[in-house]
Image 1 (cartoon, rainbow, N blue to C red):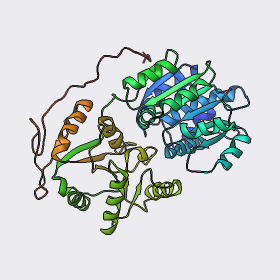
Image 2: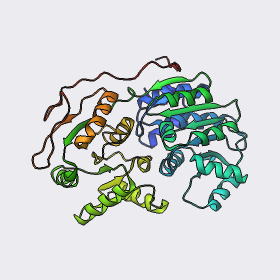
Image 3: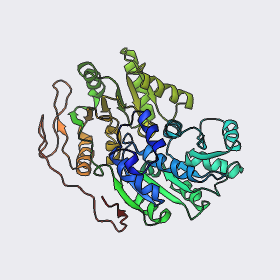
Image 4: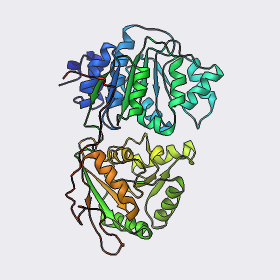
Length: 405
């Protein structure tokens, strides 16, 4: 299967080849033909599966068929980092002469954004909060939007953007195409789809809620007071290229970053209290290899799109089981294998069992002596667990039409 066979023009197919995209990814294979028809679509896919190209390539082709003024494509994303990544992807994919793209995000001044809109942006990539600011100021018109993309919709709802999304959708033309991408299909996502979409088709790049088979998952039981010592030990014994370390809180990310820096690790951190230039510098250093360890919170990590992350370490077990899938999806990408390591204190075992129920996979426990850990819970063995869990995805009242294969 090649890009031309999906219905893309020869010019766009050559563009993909020039960027090193030799063949479509599963989400691209399933989504591109549907998007080309103008139908609404729900795509279940993680970051790193090629979903940005899955919605931009057919959208670029459809826009080229008939030139029109105004903002024709609106992409909403949960974070500044992800919005910037989406804009960068568009600039790579769009042939010369394609409509301009404006990025509307917080953390930067209104001046440059206003100028980009005045110059005539055909595509706007925005975070919902900053877009509402522009709408209230009268600096952006959405009266001609033909395509709405809700990227990482589950994360936007987690952050609390649902009211903002509803306000934005309310001013859009009803005769539009809506594309929604999410790693999970919760009842909240289904309700959002029901209220914003028309007979959407559902495509899935992988089974919802499951980790990639290229990721080896391990949990280390540990006493709470020994977590930092165990992390330092693991960083010494593991051979890694780049490692993402997740904490639950901004304060925890700051504290851990300073400890690792004192141990002479090349480390930086990214969380909501860091300024936009600081966050961009941290991401750039991580991508370019100047930083080998990046400490992050869940929300701030959205938009990290680095194929060579060898390890993800959950210093703190996530509060929501879905966040575990998001976190470990940062490794084992682009055909590479990856390692996901979770530090589990006795109070975390309930959360770990919830994660295993969601993924349908038992996470191997490995007990290292000297760190006060003990395997917890019935059926969880030291070194290897044989607990099997069934998926807990229940019946849903809203059923998008599954795309025909």
